[in-house]
Structure formats: structure tokens, C-alpha cells
Image (cartoon, rainbow, N blue to C red; front, side):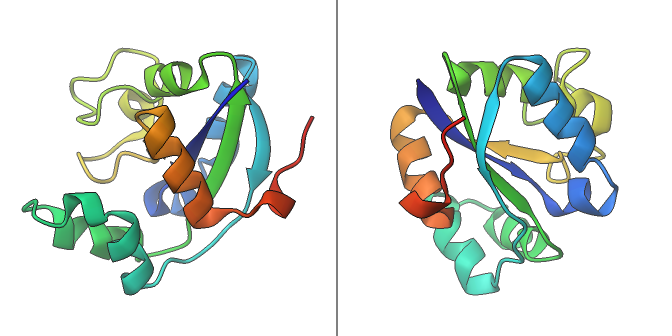
Length: 139
């Protein structure tokens, strides 16, 4: 079984979309094996998004990700990285396919409701950022 990290971003939490996002995972045979609500500090957000440090959107991204609580989750299932990325849709919600999370709920390119790991290597690093082995629950 493959694992990946998904985050419901501050806009998704504040708009009451947690259940809508989780329902889409469960309807697509994706198991949630860990989940919690956290409020990132600026330092934490900068560490998590360090790969984007040189990008022009880094400051606005980290400011947004510290603007309210987020819901990081570990998802598990067959081809879960690809499946999750398909369910999320394109980063730019205007380019996302009909029926994807971002197309249905995003309000701009940053406030696009969800984050998801893009590879097994990234998933391993991102999962370890938020969770330890005792927080993962086999189902």
C-alpha cells in the first residue's frame, strides 16, 4: 500500500469543507490512517515549503498557510498519490477538471483548499514533518 500526505488548507477549514474533502477520499477507496488539526507557525510553514523558498509566491504561501488551522492527513491505498492528485485537480482551479476538489471549492490559485504530495519521496518527507509512527493507525 502506498501512502501520501494531504492537507486541508486554512481556507478549506474556515469554510467548513473538511467533511466534503474527506468524503471524496472515502468514496474513492482511500483510507485515512492519521489526521489532526494544527496551526503552523511562520517558521514551520517556511520549513515545510522550503523547496519553494526562491519562488516569488513563497512569502504569500507561507503567510496564507499560517492564517488558520490546517488538517494534515496520511492517506493510504493503491496508487494513492496519483489518485489523490487526480481528486485534487490542477493547482490553478480554473484549469482543474470538473468534479475535482479544487474546481468545486477553490477561490484562487493559493486558496485552493488542499495540498497533496507529488511523489513517494516527497510523501515520505512530508508525512515525517507532521506525524510520528505512533500517530499512524492501520485500518
